[in-house]
Amino acid sequence: MMKRSTLDLWVGAFVMMGLGALLFLSLKVANLSSFNSGETYPVYANFDNIGGLKVRAAVKSAGVVVGRVTSIEFDNQTFEAKIRIDVESRYQFPKDTAAKILTSGLLGDQYIGLAAGGDTANLKPGDTLKITQSAVVLESLISQFLYSKAAEGPAEKK
Amino acid sequence: MSSWVARAISDVGARVVNFVWRLGFAARFFWLMLRHSGTALRRFPLTIREIYFAGVLSLIIILVSGLFVGMVLGLQGYDTLARYGSAEALGVLVALSLVRELGPVVAALLFASRAGSAITAEIGLMKATEQLDAMEMMAVDPIARVVAPRFWGGVISMPLLAALFSAMGVFGGYLVGVVLIGVDEGSFWSQMQSAVDFREDVWNGVIKSFVFGIVVTWIAVFEGYDAPPTAEGVSGATTRTVVTSSLAVLGFDFVLTALMFRGV
Image 1: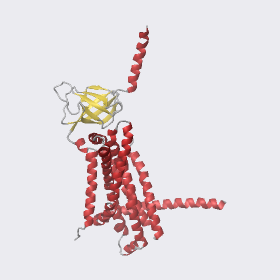
Image 2 (image 1 turned 90 degrees about the vertical axis):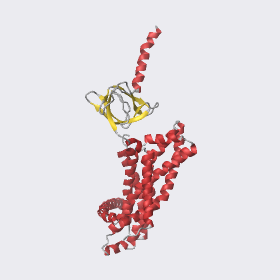
Image 3 (image 1 turned 45 degrees about the horizontal axis):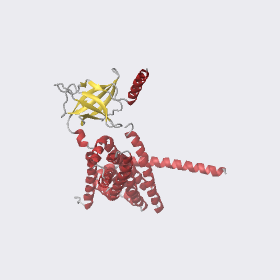
Image 4 (image 1 turned 60 degrees about the vertical axis):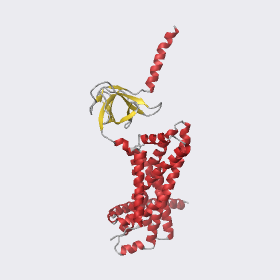
């Protein structure tokens, strides 16, 4: 029969500390608990242009994170981007919810904002959001502004 | 003149051949070690003893270095971030740089010089004093009895040490950033939590440190086993362990980083 030694105690304490550090990193630093808590249901949305949206981007409604973007695909039939959003099951949205691609701050990350509509029926898993608004692309915004300036410029001189 | 050139060329050639020879031997040694790992894992007390020597005795240096690296990151990061008015992102900076890079790499470098050199010296001395030959005479396979437990002890210890290093570093960053300088505590943690992903950052860091553990301990046991059985040979092998494993860790770090964080 093998005897227990103080060496085992030290190794046990070391392994406990190491696993504790891993737990700290995953719970406190990476906030794993809030990611996988609860069930989610998928909702799809098609956008003309998603700008710099990335997988795992936040989906917010009224500023509160309610889900994550889980996949981004290009639909070769409609030439649109097809986004899959996993919304947490505890949040239910009306069928006519609108999705916008927004930017946090001037140069921040892009996220999807959901604005609830007035429909009485709720979104079912796998539904597609009908009303979407694409990301604002800075270049097209500037060119629009320049064109409108150029168009009104000579008219004012008359 | 021509003989000098010829000698220089043949010298380079001999070095290259010797290097390839050793590399092949090291690969065969690795395979032999894996095949004999059954004994090390079945007689687990042997491995526990090596976890004690490689892991527990490295704790102090890992914890203290982690704390100081985190504190330095806190100071330097605050200084840089404050210029752009985003000092609240300090938590993100400290946590990401520790979990992704500094934790696994610096812990592996410290581990190589603290535990790797000890493993090489021990095995080398066992060989020089003919203990390994004696074992073989008694029909005890030295690879199964001596080498494999040390290898697994190192491989098991490394990820735990790296995790401890990162955790201590985050704590050090918190200490300097929040307690000392006065960055807002809520945004320090919440920005960190929203920016650090478990699979993408923490788990990849664990994989990195696991690979570094294999590389460093493999080099350490191989250098010890291959050391010329003299005092000079053992000292040379110990030096080579630290140099080679440090270079290997940095090289593997680049490869792993390129594989893991491409396009993120």
